[in-house]
Structures are given as structure tokens and as C-alpha cells.
Image (cartoon, rainbow, N blue to C red; front, side, top):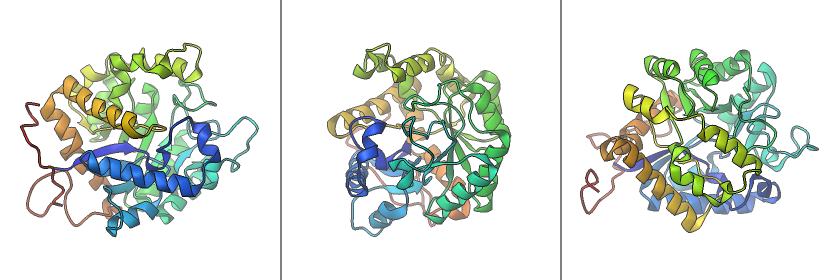
Length: 341
């Protein structure tokens, strides 16, 4: 079946840092997103799950057949607290003053009422599910990697909003405690979650939630990346904390076999380096779990996650990620046996 990447950011296909998006126009962002959509399709990904920063404009044009690209599931603007993983403004910028907020790539929402509003606005603009930030991140500046974000009531506001639309909430999360908390509050997909404990892995499986870890972050080759050669660089400090606190992740996946999907999560990277990185990500999961399991993550499992969008599912006329009667005919023709190569 056509491959499914369950964690992309189509509107962040640009070289540089988050700060470079501050001076980028919608015209350039949109043009770059069309290039990335074509990149994904040419690399065999016939469906992608955009995890924040994209609305339905590009999807409409692709679905009309005017541009080559994959089927697109949308989270809309990612929802973050002030000083959270989605707050990319400078120290002098207040809520609503950043380019990413003005363009709807990010939505800063504090308190139950603002989260209800942000979630509803995303659905009004074509989102199929919601994505919120419940812990610190590597690329963001204002939040430490260990930070816990959003109160239980704030998370519940997002979960309730998504349920009203017959859909679900996915969370950006790194802290194990926040993984467990999110699952208890009704979150259906854990994105990242590399520090997950055995207790919370068991909980994830028991609740039937999906696991979307960016496993390339744990590959030994990641330590050789040029970005990580300056130990004083703030994102490198965060990344090294993450790398050093995730030793059991792959072993727990092997032991408990959660519903794991393919997650690339490359941002601020274009062209040949982007393609090389995505190829490495495919290779790495096959190296860790074997070709068959890797293919399941990129096909069947990803297709089942797509179905969590319920009545919001934009492609409800057929299944994705499988080859069977009545499914969408998203097919790859391969010269060789992918189970062996």
C-alpha cells in the first residue's frame, strides 16, 4: 500500500530556524508547501498527517487534482500555552504578535475558554483532529525540555472539543508523567513520548491509543548531526537531555507492541538533505524492528490512525494503508521484495 507519514509539517518546509519563519510571507510558505507535498508523493507517501501549521487550502488543491501530492489529514494550527512548545516569539513579543500566530500556524491559548476557542477555530478552518503541546520541546526557546504544560482542565477542554466533532486529540509530549496524564484524560495519540516508562507503555496499550515516536532522535547517527556539535547551543542541550533519557523506548516497543505509526517530523530542512533524512528514518525503523513491522507502521497502522477522525474523516469512502476490496487504490509498485531489501 502507499506509505503513510503520520507526523509532518507541510508549511515548515524551509531551511533555517524557527526565527526565519517570522519574516516569511504566506506566498512563500504556500509555494514551499506545494514542493513538499510533491516530495512526499514522489517518495512513496500517498497520505500524510500534518501535525500543525497547515489548514485546508493546499489539501483542496491537491484533492482537485491540480497539484501532485498525498492525501492530507490536518490538525490546523498547533495549540500551545504561552511559553510552551508552540510559543516561538521573541521575549518582547506578546500573544498574537508573531507571524506564526497571525498566519494561524500556531495558536497560543491559555485557560479552558481560550482552548475551546482555538480548537473550534481549527475545526472551522478544516482541521480533522487537534494537536496540543503538553510538555517542553527541543526547537522552542522559552520552555525547558522538562517543562510540563497545560493543566488537566485545559487538556480536557481540547479533548471535549474534539469529541464534539467526533474526532480526537494528539499531544506533543516528552515527559513520561505527561504521557500518563494525557492518556488518563482521553488523548488518543502520543506523539514523541520517547521517555515513556513501562507503566505508561502498558497504559497506552490497554487504552488502545496510538504511539507516534520520532525514533530517528534515538539513532546513534543523530549525534553526528552538525547542529549537535556545539554543546552550548540551547537546542543541543535539550536534545542531549532527551537522548540520554530514552534508553528503554525501543525495548518497550518490542515488548508491548503498541499501535505504532511512522513519524518523520522534519522541519526547516529542504531538498536533497530532506530526502536523505527521510530515507534514513525509513531505514532506521527497519533496522530496529525489521522490515515487516516497519512496513506495518507506514501502512496499516497509519491507516487505522486516520480512521480515528470519525465523521471528520475526509477520506471515509475507503480504507487507507491496506490492499483490499473497497480500499483506496494507493499503491506502490516495487521492483523487488521489500521484506528482504
